[in-house]
Amino acid sequence: MSIKLIQHAAIGSEKTLSSEKHILFVLEGKTERNFPFAKILERKLQRTRGEYKDLNKTPIVIELPDGGVASFVMLGENLSIFQKHTLLRKAVKPLLDEQPEALAICVFGDGAAREANACAAYYVATVNAAELPSRKKDNKAKPLKEISIHGFKAEHDYSYVNARVAGNTLCRSLTMLPPNELTPTIYREKLKTLAKQYGWAWEEFDMPALKKMGAGAFYAVGQGSEPQDAAIVHLTYSPKEARKHIALVGKGICFDTGGHNLKPAKYMQGMHEDMNGSAVSLGILTAATLQKLPVKLDCWLAIAQNHISPLAYKQNDVVTTLNGMTIEVVHTDAEGRMVLADTLTLASRQKPDAILDYATLTGSMAVAVTDRMSGVIANRPELACKAIGAGAAAGERIVAFPYEEDMDSDLDSDIADIKQCTMEGGGDHMHAARFMGKFIENDVAWLHADLSSTNRKDGLGAVQSDVNGFGVGFGLEMINRLIGD
Ligand SMILES: [Zn+2]
Image 1 (cartoon, helix red, strand yellow):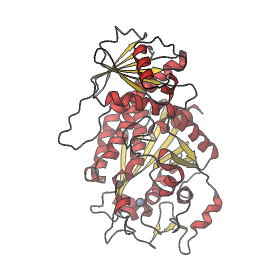
Image 2 (image 1 turned 120 degrees about the vertical axis):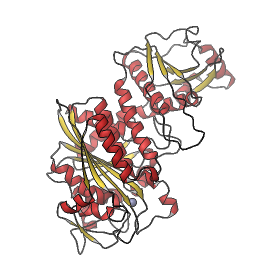
Image 3 (image 1 turned 60 degrees about the vertical axis):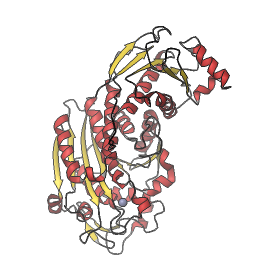
Image 4 (image 1 turned 60 degrees about the horizontal axis):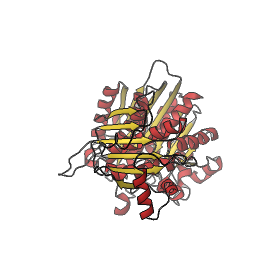
């Protein structure tokens, strides 16, 4: 459901704002303290022995005389986008918790800062007001119907922000679906429907097709499921005036048991979210389409499940991949790099300007950077540098890891061209990247994002829900920067 937007160039007075029930005040360090309800805020600060400048760290909520509620936050100039998003999320949460019908946002600051604050506040408010899957019997959605922005009138209608929210929300919604509601069969149907809705070209490589093509790495993972409904889905957004050609690749494991090297319950919990990389790719594709970005996007989604069964692949199997290399299977739980190997080959054969892949791939990345940020590895150092900048601009923090050839010796196999992984696991995120890089043809520039921050308890940055859609904003920013090159 879309939210109606009303823009007022002026902040207004306590009187004109008195009809608003929920107000978010986005202040700046230099804001003079004569804004509406400043006196009530002052009294609360006195009562709690707080200081005005602490609004830079902790938002403050006050009850208004006419029964409304206001939340105050201050976005200092020196804060990062991530910090600003986090503060805005904390400030808007108590307001959205009341499931309001309308939300007023009052923004302060001069010139560009005011516009940036308005856009950030609008993004954080709408992304957290979005409706997400719930299977509770009593769940009755009370959607936010209207946002009014006071103090800034933009020359745009925030549709580019709405596009990012739509992409993020699609990503989260798919990721949250329980695994019995998002099997590969169901997922593929949904993708077909989305392709029609957004006008994307659609093609699919199902298991018989992949077998015929010789995509043995993907096939090895898909063969353990009944029905064998795994597939590589290929969606294309191709506007007339495309300035670049970029491939998005996503890992879409709808449930990961670990396979024969079975995960214990504690680590299998939540493994329906192992398709998040594909949902991030799809979220980026959706947002880019809505924003009408001048870029051709080929989106390759590796959709499968990782099961145990008599047919499932096992340790020491040797499989032949689409590009002819042989892989010695070492650990069936390292299925992500298997399905991505052949998918990356397919993507690279079209010789795009760059490939961006998204995958919840390794535990070692989460150990390295925690669930607060995600890591990237690129076969071009400049691409990794660009990713750090894009992440910072999007409020989604990115850490770059090296891609060094001498690590390849750890993957030497006695029987095949390469080992799938090591048994020890140390530095697995870097080994995984070295492994996957072997399957990229035509020396295409490639950035791999190992998403360790897709689910963080009580939210991350702009987003309040545990599943946060991390990567959609970063990916969009990345594409914009690549278009601009
Ligand atoms: Zn796995």
